[in-house]
Image 1 (tube, rainbow, N blue to C red):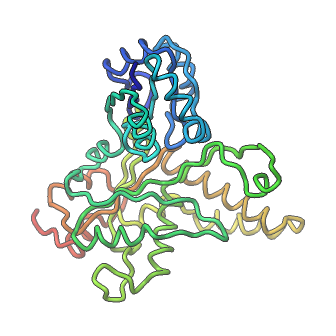
Image 2 (image 1 turned 120 degrees about the vertical axis):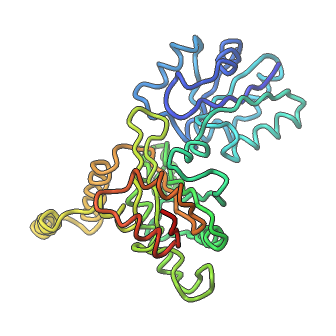
Length: 338
């Protein structure tokens, strides 16, 4: 009687390890955690069941956090598998489940796998040169948390790179629906590279003066901070793009003609409310982000100032067209070895 906590890897049903597959096939119940991250391959649920030979219960947030005792009760009687995209210990929810299992005397076995934490090496930046990882949530008009900026500043102060994870919203309810007690879920949302950069720069500018050196400079700069966009890592459509934050943002920005056309369209629609116009602008931005970087999942690495010349060269293979990657690495980061 074991609770197996099994990493699925980054992409599809084939990324599971042989040890993990054996555990799944020997389990009486199989759950797939589906809110801290998800497999982006189309029809993944049915494909998992077909290959693994077991029915799989999609475990949304309310299942994992409110019905954990039911899962553990089953694991006390027979083998149960709890599947997690990536590596199973990359989210605190799973740590909590393991602690609760052990408190109840339920045996736990963890089967690891690849995750974004290991896939960052594909950027050419060495994993042991990374500092704290941060997560950036979607901002709203009334809620703009940015405590993560201090973690970036701490990493920058010692020259370490920072892995930045964008928000994922799956089976989320609007505040209005929750207030009315309506069980209705909004469409999934995934933070893409341009929105991630926009929020990073906005927070940095807002807190200008809280720089790593206390010199009144923003922690991040559109022109002087190097970054690497990581999109759909571990998949056949994996995309890596390097450049300054401003250059990466510009890849998804409208041209002058597109911006004028957008403005003209909005001005002509006299019946649209500000809320409707904001939604339309957000849809345009998302469409341009997907055109530039492809569909989710997206992450970003902020390059620390201990950048090694081999890291510069490797990550530089992915630089955006016309990027000043090498110049900024030399003039701002001090990487002078050719």
